Image (cartoon, rainbow, N blue to C red; front, side, top):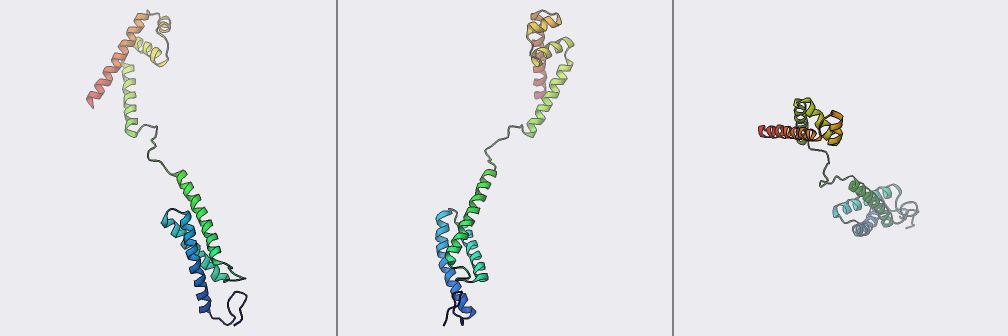
Amino acid sequence: MASGANGYGANEGASDRSGALLGHITHAMARVRRYVHAHIANRADAEDIVQESLARTLRRAGETGIGERGIARPDHYAISIARNLMADHARHAAMADECAIDDALTCAAPLPDQHVQHRQRLALFTATLEAMPPLRREVFRRRRLEGQSREEIAEALGLQPEAVKKHISRAMAQLARALDEAEAAQ
């Protein structure tokens, strides 16, 4: 029998070509499996890569054949495909690692119930501040909210520094009572 350009005899039938292709692919499969398993730790991922590279090799060999016009070395072709698939796998794994959310990370923002609790405390603080006598409220606002010294407040409002100190103490006591009463009510 004379050999054709594709490596098969001119008179060989389709079953002979299928048998030769199967022999080449079986040989390629063993080499690809060893190669991929040497580089990919996860066995399931490695097998997926082996199967996909062999499927692509079979598809290509079915289109072009094996030999001078087709795939010269199916095992080399399958390993080349496997190498590309492993690179894709590594890229996807790296992106997944970058995008993975670490459960140990916590958000600095308060939880919804804490947010509600803060709003309630702010409302209580505001209501208590509004209920204070105007001079006490003004002294407290200047000291605690604006950061003025007792001497600056005394000079601005025409008070003695000791009077400013008493207004601040009484304002703080009034706020503390309001918070205690609110917590006791809950």
